[in-house]
Length: 203
Image 1 (cartoon, rainbow, N blue to C red):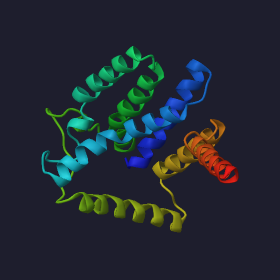
Image 2: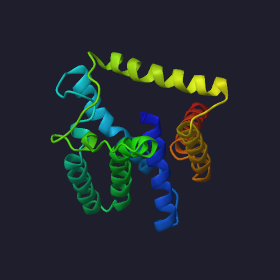
Image 3: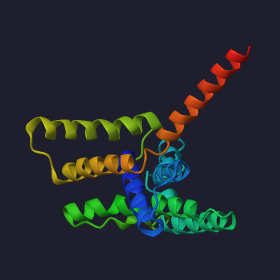
C-alpha cells in the first residue's frame, strides 16, 4: 500500500473514532499526529533498508508488531500523563493500522496472508534498493502506470475503485471536519497579515 493510502485510512479511521466517542472533529494537531503516525513505519524502514542497508527489505522494525505495540503503548502513557489522551489515540490508530493494511489487501485479493511483513525479526521482507530515490522510482512508477492504464481502458480494478472511493470519502469527511490544518493555517496567515497592516498604519 502506498504512503498516501495509509494516510487516508489513518485519517478516516481516527475521524470516525473521534466523532463516535467524543462527538467532535479532529483538531489540527491530532490530524498531523495521525497522518505522521500512519507514515512512520515506512519512514523508519525504507530509509534504513534502501539508503543505509540496515535491513534486508522495507518491512522490518517499523512494521513489526513487536515494535509497533510497545511504541504505541509508550506514546499512550506519555500522552495520558500530559492530559492529552486524544493524541495517544491519534498516534495509536495511525501507526497500528499501517502494518494491518500492508497485509490485509493482499489477503483479500489473493488469499495470501503475508504475516512475515509484520513479524520482524522473525519475519520481514520487501525489496532492497541501492538508495531512497531508486526505491521511490521503482515502487512509484509501476503504480502510476497501472492506475493510468486502468483509467485509460475504463476497466479499473476493485482495488482502484476502493482507493478512489475511500479518497473521495476522506476528502468529504475532511471538509465536514472543518478542514483541519488548512483552516488554522489560513487563519494564522490572515492574523499575521492583519498585524503587519496594523503596525504599518501605526507608523
